[in-house]
Length: 306
Image 1: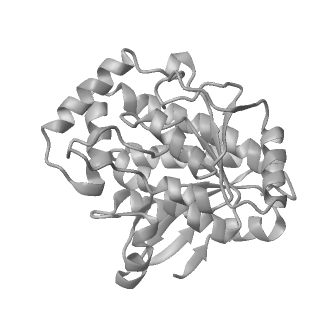
Image 2: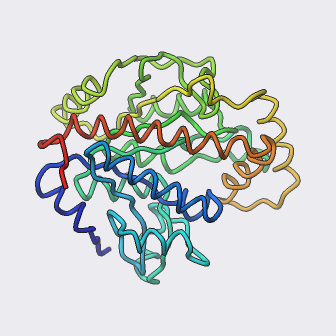
């Protein structure tokens, strides 16, 4: 697959400046227009203001593009029929010259190939609660990507409606360290404390960078998952009731295979009467801010200057 870099990202990688990878399925599939483009542009500006280079990653006409120009960002935000690109889709995307947004697993893979060390997102995929199809248990491909690519991922915990305990168990089985940023509680995006603890607490971006360097010296292949807790003012009110309501809404909708995650997230949005969407943007920006700090700590030249 051809990988194209924006001039800004290529220059940053050549000179050892900090770079932060971003997924784009949130732009193509998760947010409505024009909020998707407005949010993407605001996040890029936020990262640049922190002296870090943003690297939004997408598929455009079959190429993997690392670091979108303004026109490319506008294109994917307004693409009439974009594909949602997972790792397994990459060869099909290349062959058929497709355009779309990358999910977290695909971003982790492409960022690692490019030499980018840090990625920020909102919620992590994981193990679904008992499937409404019966005995079939769904598990996000995010977990496999995290187990085979040594990045640092900043997240607000797992997405709503996922099985927190089962997801943490899978992360442990795959050897993926989960570190709580100034907390021992593992969050679930719109909930600061799920009742499940992580094994290790970290206090600063520099400490996270030290752990990442130690992992690399040991030649370990797993990403570090940094659980950035949700502040109380960004929690969804009556969280468990809203989750139950979302599952009930989704149970009456057509089943769609891999699209079930989007069905559940849309149902959660409906159950919270739009609150989740507003909070999602704030959580994303908090994770981007921490991710930028970590990227600077890991960079050879810690401040990008235009």
